[in-house]
Structures are given as C-alpha cells and as structure tokens.
Amino acid sequence: MESVDNPRRPADGDSVWEQLAPGVARRRLAPLDVTIGLVVGADGVLLVDTGSTLREGEQLRGQIEALTGRAVTHVVLTHGHFDHVLGAAAFPGARVYGERSLDGFLRAAGTAAELAQDAVRHGTDAAQAAEAAAALVGVTAPVADELWLDLGGDRLVRLVHPGPGHTGRDLVVVVPGGTASDPAVVFCGDLVEESGEPQAGPDAAPAGWPAALDAVLALGGETARYVPGHGAVVDARFVRAQRDTLAERFGAPDSGGPG
Image 1 (tube, rainbow, N blue to C red):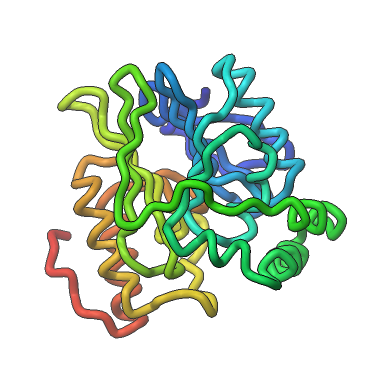
Image 2: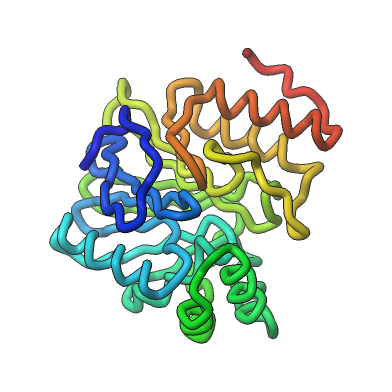
C-alpha cells in the first residue's frame, strides 16, 4: 500500500491503496476522485462505499481479496449518491450498513433510474450505469444514530449519523487508533471534500451541514486523519476551515472552536 503521505490524484486504472493505519486503507477512484475505504479485522473486512458501477465494485472486490485473502463482510454506504452506492451489488455476501432512511430512498420508485441518469451526466458509460441501477441493493443493517461494529482482534469501528449535511442520510465511519498514541481515522463521506468544493445538491441540508462537521470533529478530535469523500486525507484544521466556509456560505453560526 502507498503511504498516506503521497496524496497524488488517481489515474485511470490506478489500483494503489494508501495505508492510513495498521489494517486501515483507502484508494481513490478516477475520474471523480471518489474515496473507497477498507478496514480489516481478525474476523471481518469492512468496505466504505462501493464506486459508480458494478464493474468498479467487482474490481474492488478482486483487489481486496488479493490484499487480504478474504471476502468483504461489511459494506458501509456513507450516503446515497451514485458514485458511492452503485457498486454495492458486487458484494452479495456482505451486510450493507447505511443511515436508517437510506434504505427507503434506495428502494423508492424512480431512485435507481435517477442514480443511473446522474452517473451518465458525470461521465459513466450508459450501459454500465443501467446495469448497476438494475442491480441496486438496499440497506440490510440500518443505523439510527450510531452503531459499533466488532471486526475481531480488537478492531472496533463506530458508525455515526452526525446529522444532515451533504444529504439527510450521511454516515461517517470512525476507526479508533490501535493504541492511545495512534490517531483515529475518520471516513467522512462527502461531508468533507478536498479535491473540489463541497457539493450541495437538491438533497443537501445546508443549514445543518456546519453542525454535522462540528460533530465529525468531536468524533475524531484534533489528531485524527480525516478522509474526504473526494480528495486527499486532511487534518482537523482543514475540516474546521471547510466548516467555517460552509457556515458563511449558508448563514450558519460560527463554531467558536480553535483555529
């Protein structure tokens, strides 16, 4: 795995995984620079988000099995946008975790077609988008507020809904450090973006977004490695600055936190 200190952007066909901590890694999928996270325990293998197509999901499955020698057992969807959910059907044996309202969204009439259309608008091959939409899976393990997962070997993972922000269905994945001196790793989904401006679409909750980032910062603390949904790994200072920019953009109150 490539070091987290080399935050280069992904190239087409790039299969590089960055190690963020022992048993914790991520890779970036071109062309949208989408983050895919990986957490490995003694008994379980957890994947954070699944890419834009079944083909991407299948490639990820093959890479992870080659890296770990095991199949993915847990899939966490950070929210319901096409580039994070359309590869989920490539992991048929895994439990799928998402914020509790995400399942209803994914199973609603018209959602699959809308996700496919959005994928095509962003450059996904139409046939691949249609294939993935036809195979769209729902959430099998809904998360109301938070849930702890035990992947074995003292590997605990915390799933938290920090409140509405990028969407009303955001979920973050917190991986505590292996020792007291190790930083936590926080997979933020698109609540945080580094390689572009945070995107506020029609399903965003702009007024709540800064508060959601306050919650994310409280979960990770000052020393955590924060992994955006798109872009390079960042620190608490970056997340706080993005929080304050969003507060100014949407008229939310100042966090009052340290700079």
